[in-house]
Amino acid sequence: MQRSNSMTDIADIPALMARLGAAAKAASAELGFAPAEAKAKALNVAADTVWARRGEIIAANEMDMAFGREKGLSPAMLDRLMLDEPRIQGIVDGLRAVAGQDDPVGAVLEEWTRPTGLTIKRVRTPLGVVGVIYESRPNVTADAGALCLKSGNAVILRGGSESFHSSSAIHACLVEGLKAANLPEAAIQLVPTRDRAAVQELLTMVDTVDVIVPRGGKGLVGLVQREARVPVFAHLEGIVHIYLDAKADPIKALDVVLNAKTRRTGICGAAECLLIHKDIVDTVGQGVLRALMDAGVTVHADAELAKIEGSVNATPEDWGHEYLDMDIAAKVVDDVDDAISHIRKYGSNHTDCIISEDDAAVARFFERLDSAILMHNASTQFADGGEFGMGAEIGIATGKMHARGPVGAAQLTSFKYLVSGNGAIRS
Image (cartoon, rainbow, N blue to C red; front, side):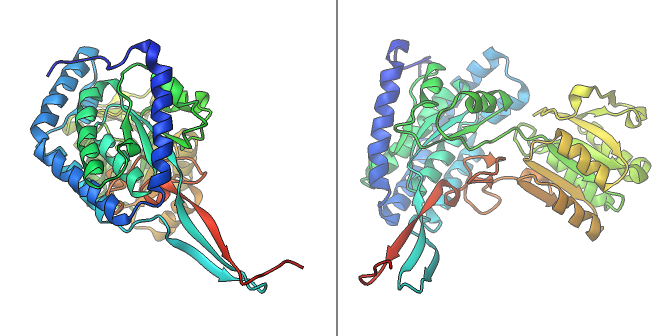
């Protein structure tokens, strides 16, 4: 397999994107009423094809890994990029899980009758065409394609330059599923170029694209929010905090924090800042910090915690920083309100967690923070649509308009009103 930078010349990109948009718009019109059975068949055939072609996908991924190493990607970012058989099995499982879910399109959300005799139903309907811009995780190709199809939306996928070959190989499997189910192949399209000009075009395609979903770091999301003329589902970085309360169970604290930080450091649910109640600094807090350092995590500690051997002094830039690596910031707080204040100042409204056996402290933490996901005595690595039972996710939305938290198939729908009368007229 020969590595390529692009399948199209730069001069052709505006025309290319216009063609993709027009094809997606036409496909979305058919998908709005496509049978649930056809969509499920497409996803199941795609899953079969991914597994059958796993050798080809891994070979493509090896090319991407070499490209990533040449670019100097960090070990954590290379981990996000890497595919092996277990991860491909995860892609297959995700496709099958989405296929097996209830079809959201046409679901009746509410129904009522007015004194005028009108019967009104509010039912789920697709958004139309979704543009997904993502960075190095090639599995997003399958997740986003599956969820958009399930929800009756056409999708234009623009993967990161690092995952160009992996995403292309996975996309080809999705197209096989569409063919087998007699659904329009333009239902799931992949932008066939690494050129950044394609992103700029996609952000302004107001006539054919209904919403943009950016999935990546702060730089990508900031670019999209600044330059998009199409509505955007905001997916900010995961500046994830864990607060160890005065009544934290030491075993739960140790297990949860270690898993939240070290299981996979390069995902948005990885813990990035540890807040420790002042009363447990020398007991639970110190034990957790030493365990982190023993696991290879660099602890960026405030003045009080920096006295613990092996830590490094935190700088102002460490608060509100997304490391996506074996690093964590750590700070002593006076109480739950002090923790809440720190999270409000430095968090990204993604996912935050409290470890405590004090119901009042947990209730206060849940009530007074407005993150998309709040957790109690559970690893923040569970901040994932698959773990929420959605089969997969297109991302974690941190905004407050429309979708919030893990965005699955149901969150990729809007609604319309169906109104029936019996010759009703308004007086």
